Length: 133
Image (cartoon, rainbow, N blue to C red; front, side, top):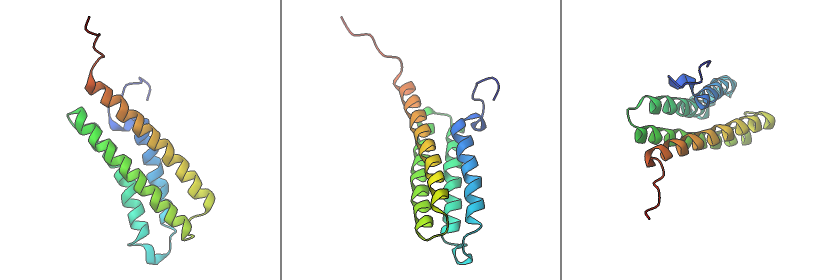
């Protein structure tokens, strides 16, 4: 992004990071055992898409309150995805190092979502009012 302006959801760094992670989740889950095709593999894919799609959908909403609502849903999906990664690791479907790398990326996405929510929430509150004399 050259101008520094956020014109579409694709310009949001948090969306870009979530999208890249979603692509990685698709690749990793494709290596899961066949019996997980409609189980954990499918859930990982759905949940990783949920993070990306809720950020995008929220950005397209007409109100800041709706945007915040969808960002909170994305944050909830991020936590769900972390739980699924922990389960995948425990079941031996992904290596510990891979799982740790994903958890670090999820933590970064979580921090970015929280910062964006705080920023948007402060916009709703408006500028600070001067004290009444």
